Length: 487
Image (cartoon, rainbow, N blue to C red; front, side, top):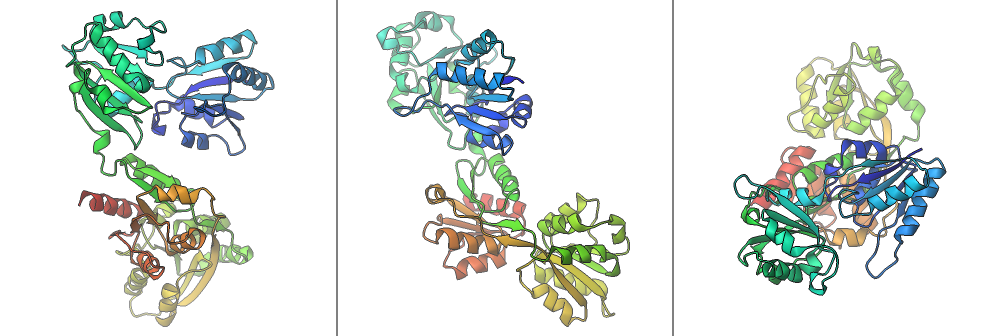
């Protein structure tokens, strides 16, 4: 097998290369640094071994020799090993040493380059490292060495004399001596300078100053320092995203939580996934299988959630049995789940709640005897729809398609939620399970719900709802959050 030295990029998990994602998805072992993006570890198989070798300041330290030995031993054992390193493995990292150790041991390896923070972090801050006519070159230097002590091999005089843009990596802790050394080497004190902290992440912060004043702003690591005329540019885009910097708790079940988290991330937020609901098969799975086998005897199939679609179609022996059956979906998410199975919903109500679906079905069939309807749904759910249909003369069969259960509480969740600004609830079950598991006291200041039914449950449990989606979908919830923070 092969050891892959993979660059994880500067922090935004979306900047991982396609090749990096490909080898991560096949890994037997992932060896990762402290600064690697931890969410990238989720891209590895669930049963892959994850080994942290990050160097903790003042804490446990794994020596480079130990890391080299680990990679060689696992490679020789025939495992597919991913060595996940922040940025690019060959840019101010020890990927070269690791590759040399593997080569000397006769272990096959491959280098998967990563996007270096030297370019990506300034770009996320709206600072191009080169500009035609003003900065036609850029120099990348390490700030890990202390220029005040004359350490290391960086020739600061030569760096200053080159002109163009100077990018300093790992230099926040030595910002003042670095700036002083560049001034002493001939760079003008009023040269524009910037420090970008936690670049490419929702906690990104850009400090803009001059070479003489940047250290007074006390940039904190990790930070990328940019010196030169380009540092005066402010082509901000990342920090202008509508939810930039917001820490938002997502309580949906997996894998649905990942979809909402990804959409929040696209808008600049930091999404904290804390699923408080999970789906299990119904206690009587045979009943669902029998209903699916007999679906052709019904006039309507009514589905009230994407999960219901998945569970029902898992039991459907032949899709052709739906040929004479009309299909209703409670909302666009459920309709999309049907479309993935090449079924177009005959009916989607204007409002995505049971009351609206009941009204739409009544309008659809008119005053004639409506017929038989099958509703595969959660084992515990509101009875507005089946009771209303039965009262209107329908022959209604409600069949449990799945059960909602509460996962075991995460002992680290309280601290996670305490630092958040927003918590999102997409169903009454998520509200109830969260309060039951963690209590109402740690709920963040801003409570956002997907619609009035969920809001009613939240208020009944003592929560104050600040944001409610007018369109009862995930997209509607995100739009409501954007509107709230814009106001």
